[in-house]
Image 1 (cartoon, rainbow, N blue to C red):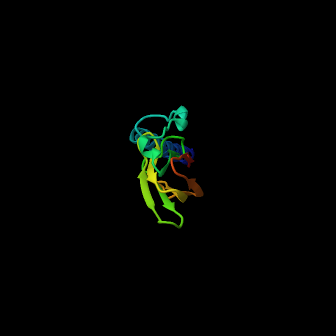
Image 2: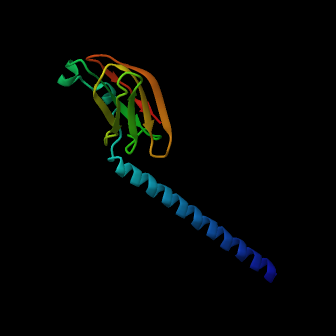
Image 3: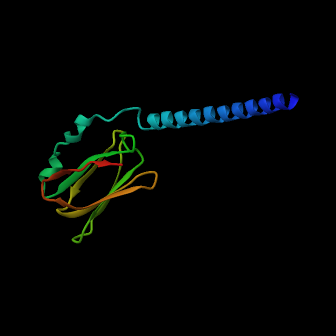
Length: 146
């Protein structure tokens, strides 16, 4: 009888330990999500902003531009990501843009030509898009999703 009670006590104590571990894991995950939300500016991107870029006076020259938004895995702005635009051939122009708090990037005053765009996300994932054509006085809007 005593061994049965001892076995039940051991079983209950193991159950309590597992329950406490689960609670700690849930709290840690919730804290990470909240901190990520706060570091992203605490905002949810407005999908109406995607077409909100307008040519600036600088684009009325013989140069062009590429801009857009970069979204992370949860659809929030990918703050901390980097976008690189590299011209293929020609003058081999290369520019780097960091993602703003609302997820926007802008490459202005690009010489006309064909470009490769690469997005480097903070977790090491990359997205690449090639054959992006930039012509004089053009604005290409390209959005990236994780």
